[in-house]
Amino acid sequence: AAADPLAGPLLAGRGQPRSAPVPAPFTQRPPPAAPHIPQVAPSLLVLCCRAVASNTQPLLWAALLANHALDASLLSLPPAVSVLLYAALETPRPARAYSQMLLLYFSILLLLKAAYQLPLVCAWPPLALRSSARHDDGPT
Image 1 (cartoon, rainbow, N blue to C red):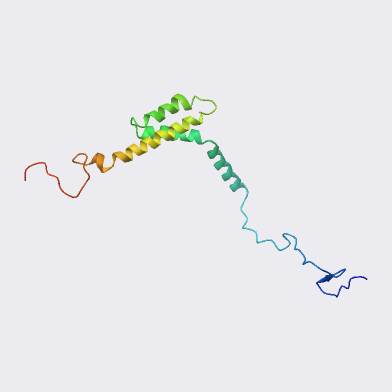
Image 2: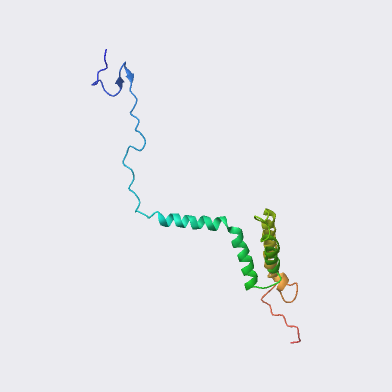
């Protein structure tokens, strides 16, 4: 016997329950589109960001040389000299150990500069914690 089309949603064909219809993906109306953005500007911005991201070492070298030019001191001299004598001459790029050496140098330098500002190092009288009490060396 043929299935009765009016038998209801539960019976289809041989008395088997009919499964609910599965909606196909993206059959509903798509969400409203974003305002139109010209494709030239984002692609140019992406290209500029990629160009900067792919050439970070020359930017780092320029920053090290600018740091030494602006703050010429013995502490800023070793990285600037290492850029000129090693990093710029290594082809195509210096080894990873060079970047790690620079990172270690600046980390130690930062810790030493921070430790130098602690009250135990810079306090007067020497090796005393700073206090609000006034220290007079002469007679009162």
